Image 1: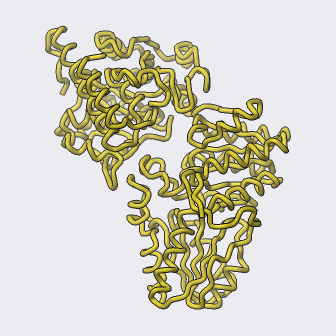
Image 2 (image 1 turned 45 degrees about the horizontal axis):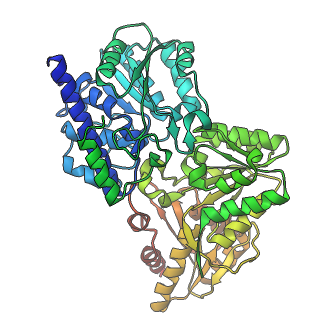
Image 3 (image 1 turned 135 degrees about the horizontal axis):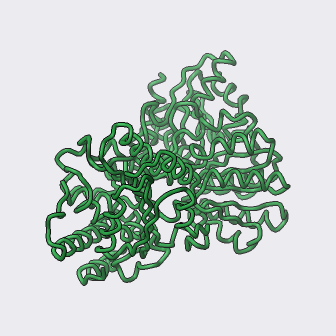
Length: 283
Length: 311
């Protein structure tokens, strides 16, 4: 169940920051071992995923398919190291298995596959597809009058996909107030700056025009992330989009805000520096 | 002969063609760095369009460019080019009679570490169902350059299946290729092996060596284009031995093996066929290309075993 809601505010924040640090360590370790994968967009989402998996979400790792659980859809599926890290550290599968990322026959594929791994709620990786699935999950919750929340994490580059806006329309049509989309707004995608490759601003106005409630937050300020997620759960008669301003590669000095770390593995030396940066608590 | 990076050959050929023909343009969907078309963007920035992470839009925009007289080369991973943008390619480009080359990169097991979500094992089946579409999968850098030139000279649509990584040169520079004409790589009396694309042609050649060591002489065809297909060559060599093995980096459903089965049945060729490819009930997996090729029984020993099972 939710892990830390009863803790004192200071302890709660300290614990979640610690979990975010553990996630960052797991991310760079996985991608270093695999020598393949996406560090940048995983690190930018580490604080958000820490808040969700170690605090906000109603989940039970011993019952991955618990019917009333909250759902998490990693629509930006290439950031799966952050999801795999969270699932392993919450006990869905052994932490040792993280070292099999992208290896022959691994359950930890380059993008999340729900049939392989307990705790993965949606197969995703073809951008935009996960978000539409999240809308369907929230719609089912509404049909069943089930009180679960569906959290979907999208990349800002992913907003280029047309299906994102088809799904956004559907969510507002049905007033899916238990659907919470979080945009990891790190302003970098594969080919360059998101604002250059395909300008999507004003993202807040776009979601508002689709009749969503929009919240903006610093995606690395844990207290603010928690406050936004709690605000988003208050009934509004419409879905909520949290635009989380983030830094791609956050927490690793040489990766921060660098396009080339979208999908590049660290060398042994770089891995050493990354570990020191994370220990030093850049976050 | 030397290995050359296939995507570099693709990009350089477009740069060369772009100098001669101002209609040539490149359309990308946030994978320009993967496709390697940076040199084209640098040489002809006004003819380079990046539509962002939006593959349906990619093919729609390419179709519109073609409708106003351009010759667009639109590229993305083959899983998105086929599964994601099929409606746009079918209708806006092909049915509309336009002139779009759609490039699907990282086909089949060459998608490797990206895993099952990104492993296109059905793109050839989908593309074969498009009337009049030329489907080309080059086997080496020389045939790739030829394929790009053929697509650029064509008035219709082309699906170019492109392995991005390096591949050894199988042909001398300037070798002539045409749609519907297979290349005879080896001639033998005992069976016919038909292969498509760099990975499978390479494995088929190795398999022929393995078979030769066991006293079986195989004819090996590098098909080059799946559509139009070299019906005459398949009928000729299949009839001669009565034994055929098809080799595709693709699910066995609806691709090369299926196309050959249709020809053999329609032409009344008395031949047994083994289809080497990913199993009809299998999705993609994650791993190294070599491991995947072995796992899905695409590699030379599996081709040789399939061949021997015909005797």
